[in-house]
Structure formats: C-alpha cells, structure tokens
Length: 117
Image (tube, rainbow, N blue to C red; front, side, top):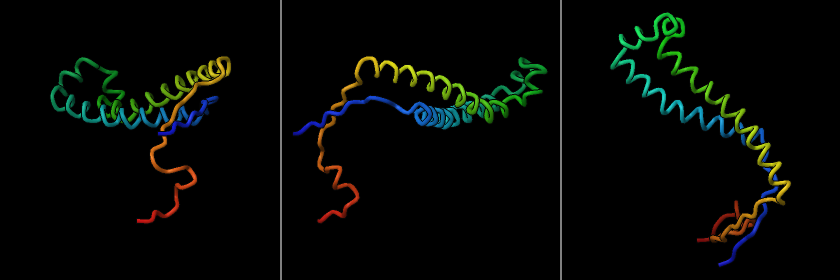
C-alpha cells in the first residue's frame, strides 16, 4: 500500500469562504425553515405577543425563514475569510501542513479514461 505525501501551503480565502457560507445557508435553510414552521404552528399567538411591534415589522417567522440564513451566511463568510487568512499566515510561518493520502486504485492520470471491464 503506497502513501502519497503532499504539503498544504495555502488555502484560497475567498473560495473557501464562499463554500463555507453557501454550506451554512443551505444548512440553516434545512434547520430554520422546519423549525420556524413548527414554531409558527405551535405558538403563533404567543410569539406575536412576545415580539410585539418588532415582530410585526419584521414579519415574524417569515423574516427568520428568508433573511436569517442569508445573515448567517454573511457572518460565516466574514469569519471564514479571517480564519483562512490566519491559517495561511500560520502555514507560511510553520512551513505548511503535511497531508498523507493513501493510494486506492486509480492514479491521477487514469481519471476520466474509460475503464475496461
């Protein structure tokens, strides 16, 4: 069994931040939409009273369903951008991160070529 040793020297902050933000938006939609729908079914009257005028202005659950995933995505983008910049700084100062990959059947040169059965 052969092992391929690679060294991670840099991560693209913008691309990684976009990926993290989009994943967060999708996960928040998966989590928040059902949660807000259930909350609106269970306690619509109580929630409206507790939020008062602010809940009415913001649209209550509709605001949460539509805007909160986007807000989460923006915050995650910014935090990931900063984190990736720090990661790149640390990788540069420490000489990179060694990554070991195990060969599992196909060489990189074989990817995309038709297989013979």
